[in-house]
Image (cartoon, rainbow, N blue to C red; front, top):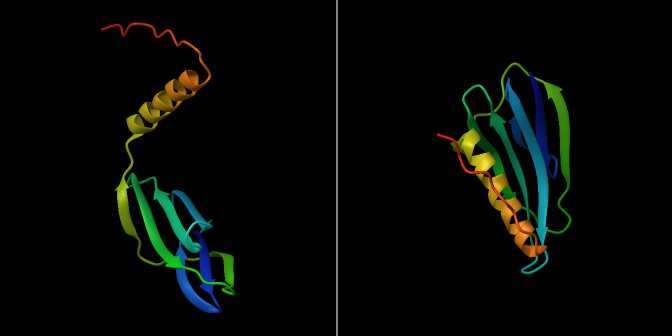
Length: 114
């Protein structure tokens, strides 16, 4: 399967991959507090799970290498939470309502048909 080999300062951090779903590796920096970290996360679509392989703090001078590889085996992940497709729709609705209010718009919703 397609996977990410992630290295921090030349040392292996993790090998992340799922046979169905996605894998993301990203760096976050928060200037307030001068904090930085790398997250390697994904979605195992077959099991309907959001997962994580690694979250590691970073310091000035750290070097990250992400190598895209094909592997039969990858590192074990930890489950973050279950995928709930309805949750995504409700989240989009809340966001749309907030944006409409901030723009001074009025949303007219159709009554639910039972």
